[in-house]
Length: 237
Image 1: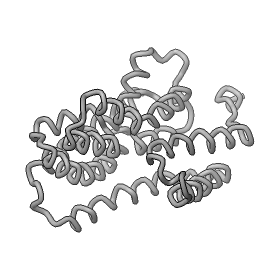
Image 2: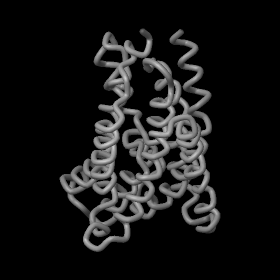
Image 3: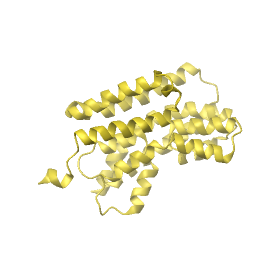
Image 4: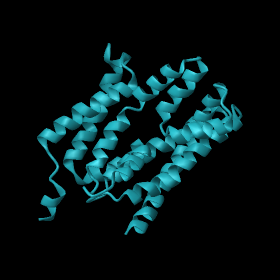
């Protein structure tokens, strides 16, 4: 059972890893401008699997920020993963050891969270390990190769490659939205709210990661109150 879940995670994590590779390549160019070596870029990406978080990290290094400033801005930008980890932990069997919850939380990204939360029933940690096993190394390698290539490739080419990640994310949320009207409404409301927050005065000046956290809490709380998800044991009875 665990072996099957692991290989299913590898299967689902492979296209995610390809999208990560393209995006990480462009981040590698930013890391190179900040003075990082390919090895340093690999380690930074492996320990901080987040495009916005790494961009904030590399630009902070380039601007000569202090260690405290770098740690603080990285924490704020990546704070939404705390919410995702808490939400995902509720889908584990109550007997799942704490170490598995920590390890799965380490590899949480928007896309891995999406494919994990979409699985029916309890989530097997081996599934996440499979997705992490494939996607995180590709992400880290992409950063290193981006540093090596520098500005060799045209900016338009790198930007075109990064579009694949957004297309993949859409492919993750569309199938469950087609099956569940509540999810569809939540997705539409999220799109509209995100757009409005990016153009409204004062609100648009809030850091994008902070806006994402606020919207996530507000929208998910409202949906949970209006249409709570039945407990798994209730569904099986």
